[in-house]
Amino acid sequence: MSEFTLKDLETIVAARASSQDASSYTATLAAKGVSHTAKKLGEEAVETIIAAVSEDDGRLTSEAADLLYHLLVLLHLKHVPLSAVTAELARRTAMTGLEEKARRPSDPGH
Ligand SMILES: N=c1c2ncn([C@@H]3O[C@H](COP(=O)(O)OP(=O)(O)OP(=O)(O)O)[C@@H](O)[C@H]3O)c2ncn1[C@@H]1O[C@H](COP(=O)(O)O)[C@@H](O)[C@H]1O
View 1 (cartoon, rainbow, N blue to C red):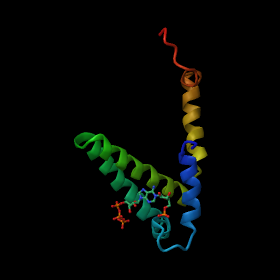
View 2: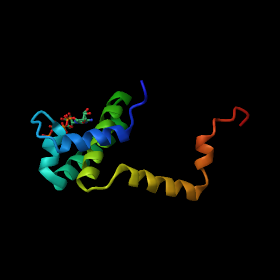
View 3: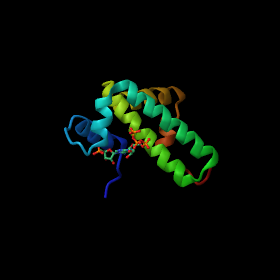
């Protein structure tokens, strides 16, 4: 099975946000709008911080997943594609000259 990516989740979020499916959390969240979703993102950020500081790695993993999911919903509502965010990260990395190093297999000699 190929690796699940944030891009895959972005595609699913876009489809579910505009669905009329009452069972879809994404549709319910999206219908509440940008302000509500931004507030939820803030709550998930705080829960992630608490998990990092005082809970175990499993809790941190779960809260980090909640955080990324809510960020994708917010980006969707603001019409900012994930590719714009990764392009910005790539631009910053290019300025450091570290992009090639990250892509090369690690050199056991170093
Ligand atoms: N990755 C997620 C995901 N992460 C977190 N959540 C939901 O985010 C909510 C956060 O929990 P909280 O306790 O903070 O909030 P809550 O009390 O449940 O909800 P509120 O009433 O406070 O908004 C939970 O209900 C989680 O189920 C998610 N809901 C959906 N997805 C994915 O989104 C896709 C579409 O899902 P549906 O829209 O549900 O079909 C699927 O791939 C899902 O796996």
